[in-house]
Length: 570
Ligand SMILES: N[C@@H](CC1=CC(=O)C(=O)C=C1)C(=O)O
Image 1 (cartoon, rainbow, N blue to C red):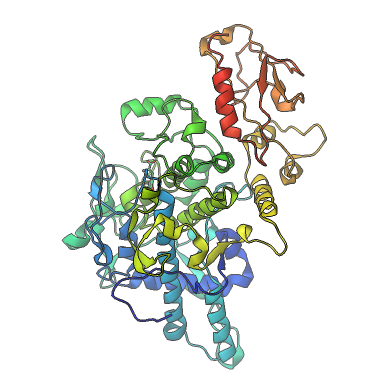
Image 2 (cartoon, rainbow, N blue to C red):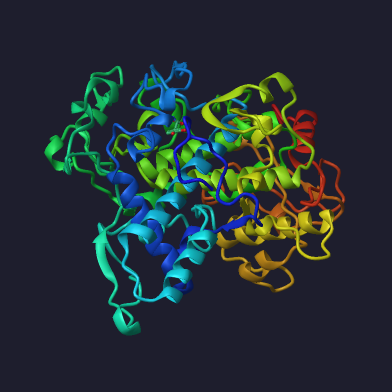
């Protein structure tokens, strides 16, 4: 690939003509000693990216600025960004739109490819090699590297931010020294902890940049504001409302706030948790689905429109959760959990115009891209219903279109992610594997990696399964069935004795024999309720469709059933 800069930035991915490289899960990738050359290159290249002056098209500041602020910036001489009503600014990123996942796909490729090129400069210009074989190894590791994703829903991680994002300085590997001696690792500032914009090497508040690049604060309408203009560096939960900029201007992280927010997100309520009426809704909100469960539900959606975006399925106004779960909705929540809730703390990730300045944005969005690719593989052949939308330009990203011409990408151009030289491990077709076999393997992985409601309920109560297996071995099995039973009743009737007998295709699950709020798997058993739910084998009070992972349309059938069995006044 030519190192010369063409007149426009052409996005094509890393070595796309070779076998695609593998994007790996961040924590596992970073912890594996074998990858320490890649980690070292990644850290050095990211720092180099930060050091490019903000006036350059391919500076970190401007690449991050594509997503949101500074508004009005025509990145790389592209068509001007459209006006975004929510952000009240001219910004490129598409949200609340069916091309939300496809717009962010070439964006991640641009980030990945830029870092890869910078890694080349790190090897050729910055590092000193004393041994050709060592240099060769670093070059090979560079070519193997792909952008890692942060899987915030993994059972094993429980929402924990990967360690490498936390400290403000870290130790990274150096090339072999003179005479073949292994050098001590080098201690460097950690660019994964925060980004700081600098002028002549000194941090400068983003609101003090020249007009074209200036970042504004976002007024919230009630006199308060999100203080992006006062920041030279990015924060996660570190900005306290009504405190002095001196305390957080350069960027402060309270990383410990993130996992509890992911695991217990009572406070989160879209669309605007600051408005009094929404605050009230929030207090009443019962949306506490464990994040892994949301993934289970996402993968069951069978059409692109419902899957991709909040567009058709606006944020919840009632309890029709099966309608509002979408990739974008889950992603929105995560932005809030990582950035801050605006009450306990403020951070760049929580707000569209500022989010991409925080480097964690790219590992989060790489995960969103992975979920999209997994969904695409499981729902092969399913795509935009409306081809006009699928042919809409994804400004400002340009590269080789399907016919080879260099122009703005459309969603159709980026539908196949492997053309950008990357793949996700779980999606690789193994030798001799059929398409059906691959889907089965992906579904097994989903069952094993993410808690479903059923698993959480059982764990919560410390139950063992009737066959004696515990939660871990249960999760490892691929034959379990995940039931979501949605019974709607009138709250007022609960003082009466209520009998709900649930039978699942003539088999009774332990789950069905107990009363609990199924909308809120963490709620302890409803204490005062005299409701009594009895096990009902074969009784026909309420038949619940058996929902199997391997095909039955869980959400559809539930939506239908709910209509049929809506229990208004029992
Ligand atoms: N504005 C979204 C959250 C959000 C979405 C983004 O895409 C983003 O970049 C930053 C934040 C919400 O309140 O639900």
